[in-house]
Image (tube, rainbow, N blue to C red; front, side, top):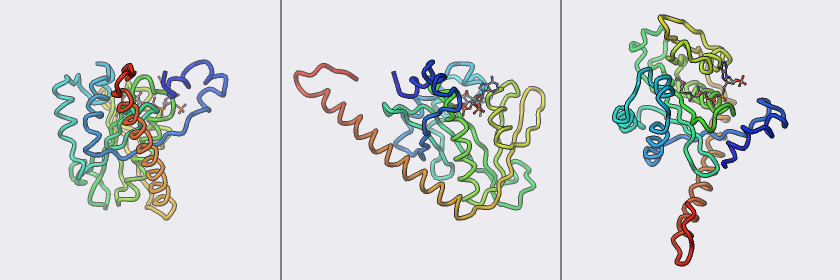
Length: 225
Ligand SMILES: CC(C)(COP(=O)(O)OP(=O)(O)OC[C@H]1O[C@@H](n2cnc3c(N)ncnc32)[C@H](O)[C@@H]1OP(=O)(O)O)[C@@H](O)C(=O)NCCC(=O)NCCS
């Protein structure tokens, strides 16, 4: 059982229900995480793929999507659990403002898409990824953040409303956008500090995982992974 799962049980409710949430460390993802990203998306159930991609994405389409992500242009954020499993991915895609016919004076706008593994839901991870995406936009001269989802996606609509997004519903779909304030020293520091903590956490988990794998290969040991 993972630590994330642990907080979904009655103990979590006893400790204070949804108010009690473990700290969520959001890490910038890079080329080396692509394989794990694919694993995360492929594990999403049919209904979740529909919510995430807006259509019934087949494995091949999901694979093309993951291998098509341009890390030099876009920003991808992730959350790893204690066992170094990627349990959430947020993709912040940048586009020229003309692509969204946005009234912004900035050159680019951003669109955010997110998914959290079933076992890690309800812990504030989706909302935290959104918050991180918003702060990254602020700090990178983008003042309009879009999100496109199905209007039936109650959880995402809740997160969007809570974040103060303007929501326009249209034939079962919803376009939400958030106007972001200019950056300030606090927003820049917050992003840098959060990334530092997440980087340390990532290195620790990756090294632990590598050490466990190495130990498992020693002669006379049973494979535990
Ligand atoms: C939407 C999704 C990303 C949310 O992730 P998550 O980590 O569970 O979200 P959080 O824990 O941060 O927040 C969930 C919030 O929604 C609320 N919520 C949960 N189910 C709800 C429902 N049916 N109706 C309204 N609100 C709901 C929770 O109470 C919580 O609110 P709170 O923080 O005020 O208590 C996740 O469910 C998912 O991956 N879904 C499939 C893909 C998808 O829909 N992606 C979004 C399209 S871009």
